[in-house]
Length: 329
Ligand SMILES: Nc1ncnc2c1ncn2[C@@H]1O[C@H](COP(=O)(O)OP(=O)(O)OP(=O)(O)O)[C@@H](O)[C@H]1O
Ligand SMILES: [Mg+2]
Image (cartoon, rainbow, N blue to C red; front, side, top):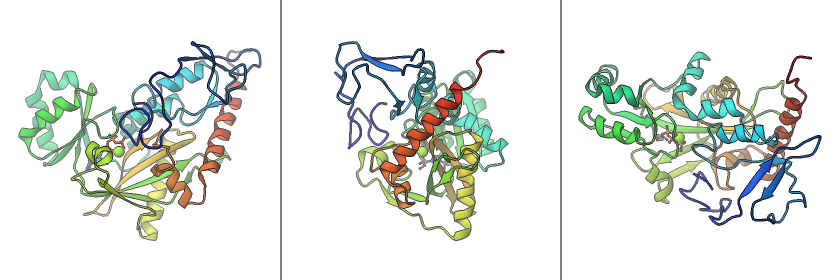
């Protein structure tokens, strides 16, 4: 999906508009101290570029497969250009909900209990897989593609007989699917920003709360129904809850070796009062009305200042990596 995480297609909302007939461009790696250059295949670059199309920093404000899963980040590494946000590793691990959970569990961070099936496993023995689900969880459960976003392919499954249809749909978006315990939870989100002082832990914003007016925060609630969710900034938490949740957000970012920015989404179980990490978004929506910058604004970092810091972090990482030896000398 290109354009905005806050909209389902190209250039919706006040997101950066990507015209379908926009010039095709190529990013050429820099050579001999020269900056990377953007070259238009049709000739002529948009306003704002130098005559040689020099690029200082790329901010990949694009979402979904091939955009936030490390693929684009790999391309930018090859182009030898500074870019904002997580690198290849954190981007791909952040996108893959199963691998993110494994790392979080390893770091002692509470995650929602889950089972994971590959498409081949499910197709070979759907009854056996269903039995495992029923043995481990009571219904409802959540079924979701391991690599997806925007709640695409996410289902709340209320009975065992409805599991197969949800699995089939989720498996049409990815070759791996998670089945999770359904938690009746408040959804609490934090914006995390890498510290300009690399020796310090990341900065964590005030909390935000999403209260869907639908059964859960589905695709419909996110994008099709203008009144699909209420946002509360800051979320009302006790001092103790806030300390605990912020610590979890910070640890989550570090467990994935996050860089630049990420939004960490938590569930606060209404029954037990426990927090769980639901997921990490390494390229959160970034329009001026998106949760990520809004949380920072409420935390005292304005949009322009936020962008400046992210650009500085990108340039600092690029400089550091450039200083590394690539072969034994
Ligand atoms: N285990 C669960 N228990 C209760 N609700 C859940 C669970 N998993 C997901 N949900 C609901 O479904 C929504 C979407 O799930 P999730 O955030 O995992 O998917 P996503 O497609 O990655 O979303 P995003 O657009 O944030 O990337 C959640 O915001 C929540 O409302
Ligand atoms: Mg989500």
